[in-house]
Image (cartoon, rainbow over all chains, first blue to last red; front, side):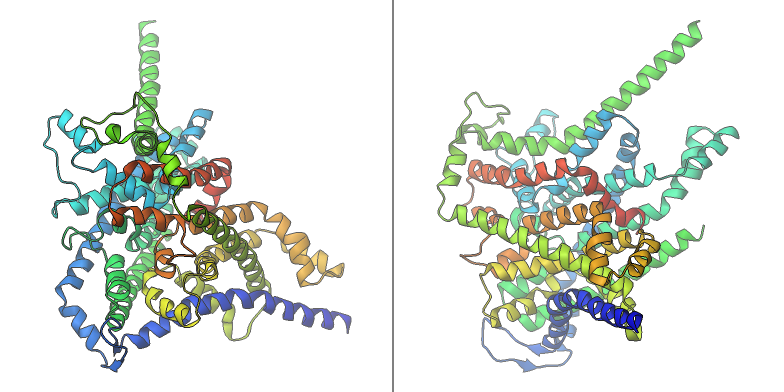
Length: 295
Length: 284
């Protein structure tokens, strides 16, 4: 009798523990998502009129014909692929450098943290300063090295590269730390066995270290890919999407359509296209990871 | 003899090369930030000059002074602080409780798994996708330009990873401890407060710090949901750009002042921070 009372009591409290979490997420995640889906079937341009008109899938059809939307999607994909790839390559190399023991290396690892904890907005203005064509450090370095100075943020051909450089600087530390954690967690017995068999450093790296690191690498890539799709703070502060449309990454594009021009119906539709796109991307990666674990 | 010497030399060179490489990496990582700090102490003729002046002859505090004289600046700073602290507390408490509840309470219809997967999914799409309807919702509730709106927003941003991180920690605690507590007559709440929570201290520290940093640094929703009263510092910093542009000295000063607390916090707690950040990557 007593036991049953305790169990029941426990269950009620357990449910009470869960409710706030679910409640919050319902209010701020599920409900807006569903609301956005509904809105995507309407034409609602708040800047023009308060009226909402049901138009079915027309927003979606228009999106796929909208060259600005397609261009934004294109440069976003390029942005993600290039920045994540470079971050992973540099991150891996630096992680190997930093994952030994030693007080100085511990200090090095904590200094490396700095770029990623700085407010992205501050990162943006910092690099905007560095990229300034008239007094910026980057152009100065270029002239010292004998290269021509560039309009880093003013030239539509280069602006995206500048934003990518900023993003790489900002987030490589995260990749480095993930890999350091992965490297330090590697089991030492495989190494012992291989060394006894006479393997040299290169063979150790290729046949033991990298395969064992594969799960960590894939998860890190996944996390970085997901976050790279969301980049908007630095774009807002560095280029505001310009010059022209050359740095209008997807998150910024959606922001502009929905909260600057208030084309709410259309913004909701492209939001959902983007969400579905990211879901497929993510599931592809999870399948990749499962394959890696099978080794 | 010569061969031993040669080997020692190559070993020294290797170590030296390693040091140089690490130094180069740190250099690239830190120089931009150091540049920001230096700029904040420069006069306009120094930070606008070409060729660039690295270390100025005359240092100045006028940039910082001008920041302090900006109208509403203390209000904005207070907003950032209050919003970050409250949303962090809420996220950690609600998230930990939620994680424990989901772990130990069996819900019907496999709801446990559904909820956990849903929590995972919330990380998978960009927040901007919900920004528009969320904005409409907040507006209808009359919460535009209030601290509460941002507190709720940031709490929900941090909840998913608090739940996942703490879940991992809770699963690491042997069930026998809880069973012993049940035999002693502890109910759910008591078990959580007396046993689970204390044993998960590293996880709590990690999630607290990460939630704080997230809320402190957030910009997009701050700029969407606030205008005057609840404005946070990131919005102020971005506001420098659109105004008349380019008070680089003041911007740098405000930037340095704003990121300094986070850097100090991250430095002090870096062990937990790294653990928290990478727990997803290594075990995830």
